[in-house]
Length: 358
Image (cartoon, rainbow, N blue to C red; front, side, top):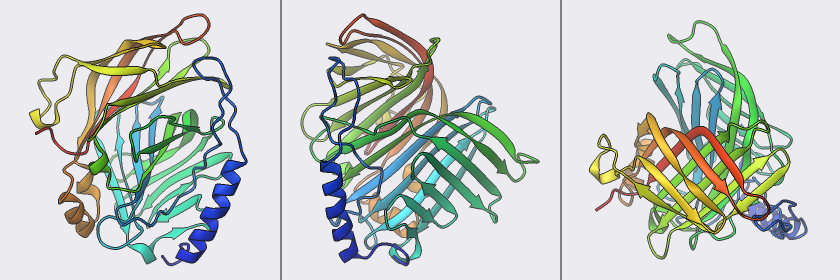
Protein backbone atom coordinates (compact mmCIF):
# COMPACT_ATOMS: atom_id res chain seq x y z
CA UNK A 1 0.00 0.00 0.00
CA UNK A 2 3.08 2.21 -0.39
CA UNK A 3 2.94 4.21 2.78
CA UNK A 4 -0.08 2.20 3.89
CA UNK A 5 0.05 0.01 6.96
CA UNK A 6 1.40 -3.49 6.46
CA UNK A 7 -0.77 -6.41 7.43
CA UNK A 8 1.24 -7.37 10.54
CA UNK A 9 1.25 -3.78 11.69
CA UNK A 10 -2.49 -3.68 11.00
CA UNK A 11 -3.08 -6.51 13.45
CA UNK A 12 -1.00 -4.77 16.11
CA UNK A 13 -2.69 -1.42 15.63
CA UNK A 14 -6.14 -3.00 15.61
CA UNK A 15 -5.38 -4.75 18.89
CA UNK A 16 -4.23 -1.48 20.43
CA UNK A 17 -7.31 0.28 19.08
CA UNK A 18 -9.61 -2.32 20.66
CA UNK A 19 -7.88 -1.88 24.01
CA UNK A 20 -8.24 1.88 23.82
CA UNK A 21 -11.87 1.73 22.73
CA UNK A 22 -12.79 -0.62 25.58
CA UNK A 23 -11.33 1.87 28.03
CA UNK A 24 -13.20 4.95 26.86
CA UNK A 25 -16.83 6.00 27.43
CA UNK A 26 -18.78 8.52 25.41
CA UNK A 27 -20.93 10.93 27.40
CA UNK A 28 -24.34 11.94 26.02
CA UNK A 29 -28.08 12.05 26.48
CA UNK A 30 -30.32 9.22 25.29
CA UNK A 31 -34.04 9.55 24.62
CA UNK A 32 -34.69 8.34 28.14
CA UNK A 33 -32.34 10.98 29.61
CA UNK A 34 -29.75 8.45 30.88
CA UNK A 35 -26.01 8.41 30.22
CA UNK A 36 -24.66 6.66 27.15
CA UNK A 37 -22.83 3.47 28.26
CA UNK A 38 -21.34 2.59 24.89
CA UNK A 39 -17.56 2.86 24.43
CA UNK A 40 -16.27 5.81 22.45
CA UNK A 41 -15.80 4.97 18.80
CA UNK A 42 -12.96 6.02 16.52
CA UNK A 43 -13.06 7.55 13.03
CA UNK A 44 -9.87 5.68 12.11
CA UNK A 45 -9.84 3.20 9.24
CA UNK A 46 -10.37 -0.39 10.34
CA UNK A 47 -8.73 -2.08 7.33
CA UNK A 48 -10.58 -5.35 7.87
CA UNK A 49 -9.20 -8.43 6.11
CA UNK A 50 -12.36 -10.18 4.92
CA UNK A 51 -12.49 -10.78 1.18
CA UNK A 52 -15.61 -8.58 0.89
CA UNK A 53 -14.91 -6.18 3.76
CA UNK A 54 -15.52 -2.52 3.08
CA UNK A 55 -15.73 0.82 4.88
CA UNK A 56 -16.46 4.38 3.87
CA UNK A 57 -16.70 7.91 5.19
CA UNK A 58 -19.55 10.07 3.84
CA UNK A 59 -19.49 13.87 4.05
CA UNK A 60 -22.61 15.90 3.27
CA UNK A 61 -22.07 19.67 3.39
CA UNK A 62 -24.62 22.45 2.85
CA UNK A 63 -23.37 26.00 2.47
CA UNK A 64 -25.02 29.34 3.10
CA UNK A 65 -24.26 30.25 -0.53
CA UNK A 66 -26.58 27.47 -1.76
CA UNK A 67 -23.78 25.07 -2.75
CA UNK A 68 -23.76 21.42 -1.66
CA UNK A 69 -20.93 18.88 -1.53
CA UNK A 70 -21.51 15.13 -1.25
CA UNK A 71 -18.38 12.99 -1.07
CA UNK A 72 -17.39 9.45 -0.12
CA UNK A 73 -13.96 8.06 0.76
CA UNK A 74 -13.97 4.25 0.58
CA UNK A 75 -11.55 1.38 1.24
CA UNK A 76 -12.66 -2.05 0.09
CA UNK A 77 -11.44 -5.60 -0.46
CA UNK A 78 -14.19 -6.31 -3.00
CA UNK A 79 -13.11 -6.12 -6.61
CA UNK A 80 -9.50 -6.29 -7.82
CA UNK A 81 -7.18 -6.91 -4.87
CA UNK A 82 -7.31 -5.85 -1.21
CA UNK A 83 -7.49 -2.33 0.18
CA UNK A 84 -8.54 -0.64 -3.02
CA UNK A 85 -9.33 2.99 -2.19
CA UNK A 86 -11.31 5.64 -3.97
CA UNK A 87 -12.80 9.06 -3.35
CA UNK A 88 -15.83 10.16 -5.32
CA UNK A 89 -18.15 13.07 -4.99
CA UNK A 90 -20.21 15.88 -6.43
CA UNK A 91 -20.26 19.64 -6.07
CA UNK A 92 -23.77 21.02 -6.65
CA UNK A 93 -24.02 24.70 -7.55
CA UNK A 94 -26.99 26.89 -6.51
CA UNK A 95 -28.27 26.92 -10.11
CA UNK A 96 -28.38 23.11 -10.18
CA UNK A 97 -25.17 22.58 -12.14
CA UNK A 98 -23.28 19.47 -10.95
CA UNK A 99 -19.52 18.89 -11.11
CA UNK A 100 -18.27 15.43 -10.21
CA UNK A 101 -14.79 14.37 -9.09
CA UNK A 102 -13.10 11.06 -8.44
CA UNK A 103 -9.84 9.34 -7.57
CA UNK A 104 -9.13 5.62 -7.34
CA UNK A 105 -5.98 3.73 -6.41
CA UNK A 106 -4.97 0.11 -5.88
CA UNK A 107 -3.39 -1.02 -2.61
CA UNK A 108 0.15 0.25 -3.07
CA UNK A 109 -0.76 3.51 -4.74
CA UNK A 110 -2.47 5.46 -1.96
CA UNK A 111 -1.39 6.59 1.49
CA UNK A 112 -2.72 6.29 5.01
CA UNK A 113 -1.13 7.54 8.22
CA UNK A 114 0.01 5.08 10.89
CA UNK A 115 -2.91 6.05 13.11
CA UNK A 116 -5.26 5.58 10.11
CA UNK A 117 -6.79 9.04 10.48
CA UNK A 118 -5.41 10.58 7.30
CA UNK A 119 -6.21 9.14 3.86
CA UNK A 120 -4.65 10.46 0.67
CA UNK A 121 -6.07 8.95 -2.52
CA UNK A 122 -4.47 10.63 -5.50
CA UNK A 123 -5.44 14.30 -5.31
CA UNK A 124 -8.19 13.67 -2.71
CA UNK A 125 -7.40 13.94 0.99
CA UNK A 126 -9.38 13.34 4.18
CA UNK A 127 -7.80 14.16 7.54
CA UNK A 128 -9.82 13.09 10.58
CA UNK A 129 -7.46 14.26 13.30
CA UNK A 130 -9.22 16.21 16.06
CA UNK A 131 -10.24 18.86 16.59
CA UNK A 132 -10.24 20.49 13.15
CA UNK A 133 -10.69 17.99 10.31
CA UNK A 134 -9.78 18.66 6.69
CA UNK A 135 -11.04 17.60 3.27
CA UNK A 136 -9.61 18.58 -0.10
CA UNK A 137 -9.60 17.79 -3.78
CA UNK A 138 -6.76 19.34 -5.78
CA UNK A 139 -7.13 18.21 -9.40
CA UNK A 140 -5.14 20.56 -11.62
CA UNK A 141 -5.75 18.65 -14.85
CA UNK A 142 -9.50 18.54 -14.28
CA UNK A 143 -9.62 22.10 -12.98
CA UNK A 144 -11.22 21.35 -9.60
CA UNK A 145 -9.92 22.66 -6.28
CA UNK A 146 -11.81 22.18 -3.02
CA UNK A 147 -10.22 23.01 0.34
CA UNK A 148 -12.26 22.77 3.54
CA UNK A 149 -11.77 22.62 7.31
CA UNK A 150 -14.55 21.55 9.64
CA UNK A 151 -14.96 21.07 13.38
CA UNK A 152 -16.12 17.99 15.24
CA UNK A 153 -19.25 18.06 17.39
CA UNK A 154 -18.31 16.04 20.44
CA UNK A 155 -18.14 12.31 21.14
CA UNK A 156 -18.76 9.96 18.23
CA UNK A 157 -22.12 8.20 18.38
CA UNK A 158 -22.50 4.54 17.38
CA UNK A 159 -25.75 3.06 16.07
CA UNK A 160 -26.80 0.72 18.91
CA UNK A 161 -29.04 -1.62 16.90
CA UNK A 162 -28.11 -1.73 13.19
CA UNK A 163 -28.97 -4.68 10.92
CA UNK A 164 -26.77 -7.74 11.33
CA UNK A 165 -23.31 -7.21 9.90
CA UNK A 166 -23.82 -3.45 9.48
CA UNK A 167 -22.00 -0.80 11.52
CA UNK A 168 -22.38 2.98 11.46
CA UNK A 169 -20.84 5.80 13.47
CA UNK A 170 -21.97 9.42 13.36
CA UNK A 171 -18.71 11.36 13.51
CA UNK A 172 -19.98 14.92 13.12
CA UNK A 173 -23.52 16.32 13.13
CA UNK A 174 -23.97 19.84 11.79
CA UNK A 175 -20.35 20.83 12.35
CA UNK A 176 -19.15 24.21 11.12
CA UNK A 177 -17.32 23.97 7.78
CA UNK A 178 -15.54 26.68 5.81
CA UNK A 179 -13.18 26.88 2.88
CA UNK A 180 -13.02 27.60 -0.82
CA UNK A 181 -14.08 26.02 -4.11
CA UNK A 182 -12.91 26.63 -7.66
CA UNK A 183 -13.92 24.94 -10.91
CA UNK A 184 -12.34 25.89 -14.21
CA UNK A 185 -14.86 27.51 -16.54
CA UNK A 186 -17.43 27.93 -13.75
CA UNK A 187 -15.83 30.18 -11.14
CA UNK A 188 -13.33 32.82 -12.23
CA UNK A 189 -11.69 32.89 -8.79
CA UNK A 190 -11.87 30.65 -5.71
CA UNK A 191 -15.19 31.17 -3.93
CA UNK A 192 -15.15 31.30 -0.12
CA UNK A 193 -18.10 29.51 1.48
CA UNK A 194 -19.20 28.37 4.92
CA UNK A 195 -21.95 26.16 6.22
CA UNK A 196 -22.53 22.89 8.08
CA UNK A 197 -21.41 19.31 7.50
CA UNK A 198 -22.46 15.88 8.70
CA UNK A 199 -19.96 13.01 8.55
CA UNK A 200 -20.56 9.27 9.01
CA UNK A 201 -18.33 6.18 8.97
CA UNK A 202 -19.85 2.84 7.93
CA UNK A 203 -18.12 -0.53 7.78
CA UNK A 204 -19.04 -4.15 7.16
CA UNK A 205 -17.27 -7.49 6.69
CA UNK A 206 -19.54 -8.59 3.83
CA UNK A 207 -20.45 -6.88 0.57
CA UNK A 208 -22.96 -4.16 1.48
CA UNK A 209 -25.39 -5.26 -1.23
CA UNK A 210 -25.59 -8.65 0.51
CA UNK A 211 -26.66 -6.95 3.74
CA UNK A 212 -28.96 -4.12 2.67
CA UNK A 213 -31.38 -3.17 -0.09
CA UNK A 214 -31.87 0.50 0.75
CA UNK A 215 -30.43 3.14 3.06
CA UNK A 216 -32.37 6.37 3.70
CA UNK A 217 -30.79 9.36 5.47
CA UNK A 218 -32.52 12.67 6.24
CA UNK A 219 -30.22 15.47 7.47
CA UNK A 220 -31.35 18.87 8.64
CA UNK A 221 -31.16 21.97 10.78
CA UNK A 222 -34.19 22.99 12.81
CA UNK A 223 -35.48 26.54 12.51
CA UNK A 224 -35.06 27.19 16.23
CA UNK A 225 -33.15 29.87 18.11
CA UNK A 226 -30.77 27.25 19.49
CA UNK A 227 -30.02 25.76 16.06
CA UNK A 228 -30.72 22.07 16.61
CA UNK A 229 -29.28 19.66 14.03
CA UNK A 230 -30.91 16.37 13.04
CA UNK A 231 -29.65 13.15 11.48
CA UNK A 232 -31.70 10.01 10.87
CA UNK A 233 -30.99 6.76 9.07
CA UNK A 234 -33.14 3.84 8.04
CA UNK A 235 -31.84 0.63 6.50
CA UNK A 236 -33.93 -2.05 4.82
CA UNK A 237 -31.78 -5.19 5.17
CA UNK A 238 -31.86 -8.14 2.82
CA UNK A 239 -32.93 -10.27 5.80
CA UNK A 240 -34.91 -9.28 8.86
CA UNK A 241 -36.84 -6.14 9.80
CA UNK A 242 -35.92 -2.57 8.89
CA UNK A 243 -33.88 -0.65 11.44
CA UNK A 244 -33.75 3.09 12.12
CA UNK A 245 -31.87 5.59 14.28
CA UNK A 246 -32.18 9.32 14.94
CA UNK A 247 -30.07 11.90 16.73
CA UNK A 248 -30.65 15.57 17.51
CA UNK A 249 -27.83 17.83 18.69
CA UNK A 250 -28.45 21.17 20.34
CA UNK A 251 -25.10 22.61 21.34
CA UNK A 252 -23.52 19.92 23.52
CA UNK A 253 -26.83 18.26 24.38
CA UNK A 254 -27.79 15.13 22.44
CA UNK A 255 -31.06 13.27 22.03
CA UNK A 256 -31.07 9.80 20.52
CA UNK A 257 -33.57 7.06 19.74
CA UNK A 258 -33.96 3.90 17.69
CA UNK A 259 -37.58 3.37 18.74
CA UNK A 260 -39.35 4.46 15.57
CA UNK A 261 -39.92 3.39 11.97
CA UNK A 262 -40.06 5.09 8.59
CA UNK A 263 -43.00 4.56 6.22
CA UNK A 264 -43.48 5.91 2.69
CA UNK A 265 -46.12 8.43 1.62
CA UNK A 266 -46.99 8.93 -2.04
CA UNK A 267 -44.94 8.19 -5.17
CA UNK A 268 -42.53 10.44 -7.03
CA UNK A 269 -43.65 10.13 -10.67
CA UNK A 270 -40.29 11.36 -11.94
CA UNK A 271 -38.32 8.53 -10.29
CA UNK A 272 -37.55 5.32 -12.23
CA UNK A 273 -39.82 2.48 -11.13
CA UNK A 274 -36.82 0.29 -10.30
CA UNK A 275 -35.61 2.92 -7.83
CA UNK A 276 -38.96 4.17 -6.55
CA UNK A 277 -39.10 7.26 -4.36
CA UNK A 278 -41.89 8.53 -2.11
CA UNK A 279 -42.92 12.16 -1.89
CA UNK A 280 -42.64 12.06 1.91
CA UNK A 281 -41.60 9.85 4.80
CA UNK A 282 -43.65 9.34 7.94
CA UNK A 283 -41.89 8.72 11.26
CA UNK A 284 -43.77 6.93 14.02
CA UNK A 285 -42.54 5.47 17.27
CA UNK A 286 -42.42 5.66 21.04
CA UNK A 287 -40.07 8.67 21.06
CA UNK A 288 -40.82 10.59 17.84
CA UNK A 289 -43.54 11.28 15.30
CA UNK A 290 -43.69 13.47 12.23
CA UNK A 291 -42.75 13.54 8.57
CA UNK A 292 -40.09 14.54 6.07
CA UNK A 293 -41.30 16.08 2.79
CA UNK A 294 -39.09 15.98 -0.29
CA UNK A 295 -38.58 18.79 -2.77
CA UNK A 296 -36.17 19.46 -5.62
CA UNK A 297 -33.82 16.71 -6.73
CA UNK A 298 -30.26 17.93 -6.21
CA UNK A 299 -28.45 14.91 -7.60
CA UNK A 300 -29.25 11.51 -9.07
CA UNK A 301 -26.35 9.21 -9.94
CA UNK A 302 -25.01 5.68 -10.20
CA UNK A 303 -22.17 5.47 -7.62
CA UNK A 304 -20.34 2.91 -9.73
CA UNK A 305 -19.87 5.31 -12.64
CA UNK A 306 -17.29 7.17 -10.56
CA UNK A 307 -15.34 4.09 -9.50
CA UNK A 308 -12.18 2.90 -11.32
CA UNK A 309 -13.01 0.77 -14.40
CA UNK A 310 -11.86 -2.63 -13.11
CA UNK A 311 -13.42 -2.01 -9.72
CA UNK A 312 -16.68 -0.85 -11.34
CA UNK A 313 -16.92 -4.01 -13.44
CA UNK A 314 -16.28 -6.33 -10.47
CA UNK A 315 -18.85 -4.61 -8.25
CA UNK A 316 -21.49 -4.43 -10.98
CA UNK A 317 -21.70 -8.22 -10.93
CA UNK A 318 -23.32 -8.02 -7.49
CA UNK A 319 -24.77 -4.55 -7.19
CA UNK A 320 -26.51 -2.02 -9.44
CA UNK A 321 -26.82 0.94 -7.09
CA UNK A 322 -28.50 4.29 -7.45
CA UNK A 323 -28.39 7.32 -5.15
CA UNK A 324 -30.58 10.40 -5.05
CA UNK A 325 -30.13 13.56 -2.98
CA UNK A 326 -33.25 15.68 -2.38
CA UNK A 327 -34.03 18.97 -0.72
CA UNK A 328 -36.18 18.29 2.35
CA UNK A 329 -38.39 19.88 4.96
CA UNK A 330 -39.34 18.18 8.17
CA UNK A 331 -41.70 18.61 11.11
CA UNK A 332 -41.07 16.23 13.99
CA UNK A 333 -42.20 16.03 17.61
CA UNK A 334 -39.74 14.47 20.03
CA UNK A 335 -41.46 12.84 23.01
CA UNK A 336 -38.63 10.73 24.38
CA UNK A 337 -38.28 11.84 28.00
CA UNK A 338 -39.14 15.21 29.45
CA UNK A 339 -41.15 17.93 27.76
CA UNK A 340 -42.09 17.30 24.09
CA UNK A 341 -39.82 19.12 21.65
CA UNK A 342 -41.08 20.42 18.30
CA UNK A 343 -38.50 20.34 15.50
CA UNK A 344 -39.17 22.03 12.18
CA UNK A 345 -36.56 22.81 9.57
CA UNK A 346 -35.01 22.05 6.23
CA UNK A 347 -32.11 20.03 4.94
CA UNK A 348 -31.28 17.27 2.48
CA UNK A 349 -32.10 13.58 2.26
CA UNK A 350 -30.40 10.64 0.56
CA UNK A 351 -31.97 7.49 -0.89
CA UNK A 352 -29.23 4.93 -1.58
CA UNK A 353 -30.42 1.78 -3.35
CA UNK A 354 -27.89 -1.04 -3.37
CA UNK A 355 -29.93 -2.87 -5.99
CA UNK A 356 -33.11 -2.04 -7.91
CA UNK A 357 -36.53 -3.14 -6.80
CA UNK A 358 -37.39 -6.41 -8.55
